[in-house]
Amino acid sequence: MNTTTFIVRMVVLLVAVSLHQSQAWTQQFEKYRYTPPPDLNDGIKTGNLNKSRLDEAKITAGTNEILRGVYPNVHSLLIFHKSRLVYENYFTGEDVERGVGPLGLVTHTRDTLHDVRSVSKSVVALIVLVAHAQGKIKSLDQPIAHFFPEYGKHFVGDKTKITIKHVLSMSGGIEWDEKISYADPKNSEIQMNNSADAVDYVLSQRMSTLPGSTFNYSGGQTQLLVALIKKATGMDADIFAADHLLAPLGITKYKWVKTKSGDPSGASGLRLRSRDLAKFGLLIMNRGKWNGRQIIPAKLIDQALSESINIEKADDFRLDYGYQIWLPAFPVGDKWVSLIEFNGNGGQIVQIDRANEIMVVATAGNYNKRDTKKSTQVMIEDIVYPAMFDKIKAIPKP
Image (cartoon, rainbow, N blue to C red):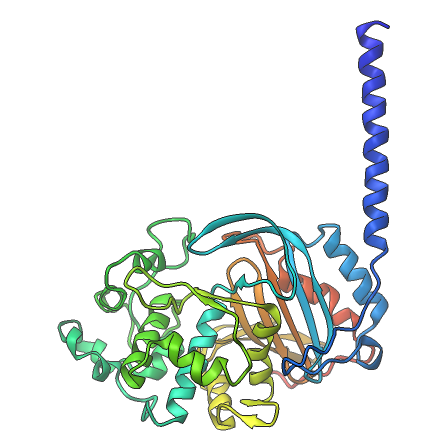
């Protein structure tokens, strides 16, 4: 056998093996069958797709697309209808843990802790509301300067007018740049996390706009809230949260990465299991109530969603920002679908659609990737909404 013949035969053999493996791989994916989520006695009520507004065949087809990599590196997908978990699935994919580094290929399960990145910001806002409801924060209109007398040298001019509400809605006016990649050391959040005193770093930045006038995405403002919680309650924010928010929700397994200055990273440091992440969304969906217990007053939840600052307004899209919570809206015919979202770098999302009584939770490992063509948000739009049996309920144009 000459060299040429040998090479040709080897190529044919490799192609045949590859096709066989590809067919087996595809058949493996096509064997996926929907199974209703189990009741784990964790406070989450369960149901099944057959009794919801969602088409099981379309959700199954969408799951196969995730398995085939149409939506890359998705780690979990949970779907709720009328506050009941009707779909739950976990996937294998490359992952990274903040503060640790690459984890390699991880087989994610319902017991796996996952970085939620900037979803941490939304949780911090809820902690502030708990402290306010308990009277530890008297008013959200208080200037933040009242809480930080030791940083008095920074509070001059318009900076003295920054209130807790301004910080909650990221409209404090302090200069900040998170538009550049988080892999770039010039990113403001990265610089803050590496500073010896995170609060001093944030407050030392100059003012760029008047407080309350302009939205500017800033993990620094979230870190001010973390420090404010400690000042108001006398407890580190993660400890106060554990006792007064996480424990009431039945969340016992979590991790909170710290900044260099030793405080919990409010901007992006929380790690949670997907079902526990969903509990924060259910708390919002049910106006602060969890299994019959009012953890946060309904009026404060309403306030967090209504006292927002506009970011973008167009004929085909609107984006507002409440208390560390995104509020997008888009048209469906002559009406609009309005959403409530917690959103984190890499594809972490809690998306709440109150009008349609749908909530979706997803985690993924696409950190620092700006391309959103196949993001978890697009995945939800492609898989969940087309699976609704009846007409999507919408609201008048906001």
